[in-house]
Length: 96
Image 1: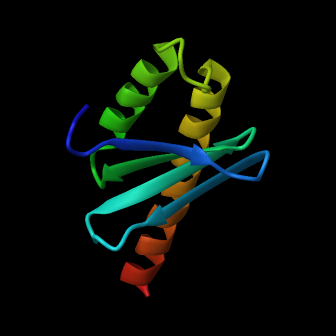
Image 2 (image 1 turned 30 degrees about the horizontal axis):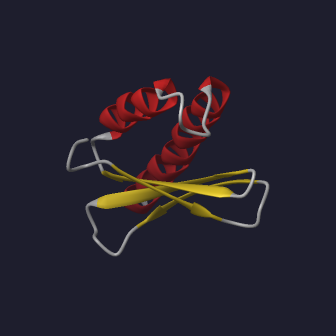
């Protein structure tokens, strides 16, 4: 597992949730996905999103995990949407 990618898995009460947020370290973000009471937290440095998706695919291939390919597709799509929104916000701030 790379330095830019970390997964934690812990119990959580919600059925399904997705959140993307910056961490206290300015150079990384946290992607949180909750499925059937398990919270998956993926941390990645900005600019290393493709590496995160590759690591996510490796995680899904592991038969002992609770994520499947549909979950990976949802995470990938949601991550793209959130990053698109953030890029739009950055452009608005730059252009005034």
